[in-house]
Image: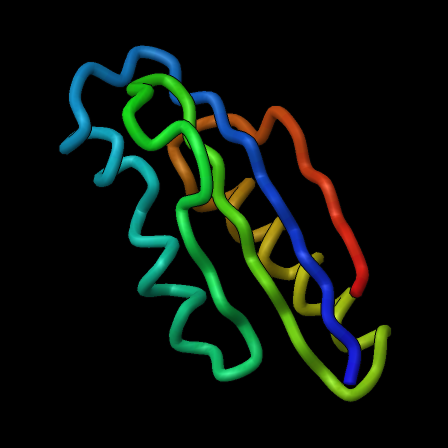
Length: 93
């Protein structure tokens, strides 16, 4: 079994409340947490209004499938969130 971890740090310029932050993040947990091979959590910057950090853990039988899952997640976050991805880091276990 292969495991990969993707951590995304996002900038949310102009965000004025935690409620707005949740709305702008567009339900990342619900969207990606439904996939049986992916676990997701907001892992940092919980109380900062203009920043957010999310970690995604993907597991599959091949490293290529893990990489594909993480690339798909990163692409969807970049296109679907009202903010900018400032940093993306990947790890393999």
